[in-house]
Length: 367
Image 1: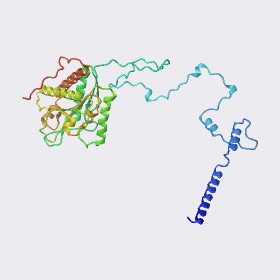
Image 2: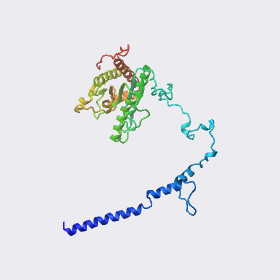
Image 3: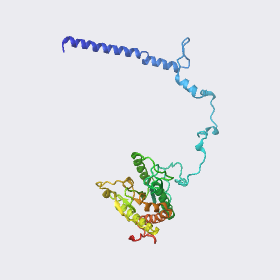
């Protein structure tokens, strides 16, 4: 760089430095420690400002005056009476101050357990758990919440339908729940309420998040067993019969297989008792059947923290299977047999002998 250029650059830098220093002095003038101390002293002095000089506004005084009454002079203060020390800190009455009965599906949540509000001698003691029952079962009636699942359309070509998978799943789950409750189990359903008919398909992201939410229920209630209940469908309408899926690539893989085997056998027994003999499509391991390289495709059986199986009871795309599902007697029989199979599985897990009616019947060949 030429000498004249260096001198020019140096002068420009010095000029910029002086300009910024002058601007800073102008902006912050009057805020020196001396001036601040003088203002603070004047504000704190009870004598007030000198004659002829306006008193500066103290914003703290303005806020205090706006938010409440002026403070009581020290000389006029009296010691408070005992009744004055009780302050009502409750919020104004509203709709949540009214006592409402608990919903029918709610439990007491430990409300009946007596616990001290404060443990002054040590850490707070955890309430004792309620007496344990036979176990906790989560039943997941598939689809619903806007997703009808498979649909059986009437064969007259009118486009009308008589049953959806979502409704059939829920009916079966409710009957299984009732049977298990009578046996002494705590049972939770992942959904309740009426479904709806065919419509536009739901976004895949919504369906996936819903599946993970259903599995989360099993974690939140500390379940012992998870059974997903589904119907089936196929483009080839001649395909029929029940099948049960499980995830073998799971820490409970062996238990999953045992559970699926017992549920599948119970389904075949129920259908034979009903008088219907569809093909037994058997038990299927998810990863092997889907050739997915050891990765199970079904979210609910893959992510379940407890032994789990997915039952596909019949094909709604098959007219014969659908006629069975329309008849509520078939659901009653299927629920009874599946509930007994779940109880038998739980007895095995607890190391108890099977009940007299628990042992699954040997496979029966279709006539």
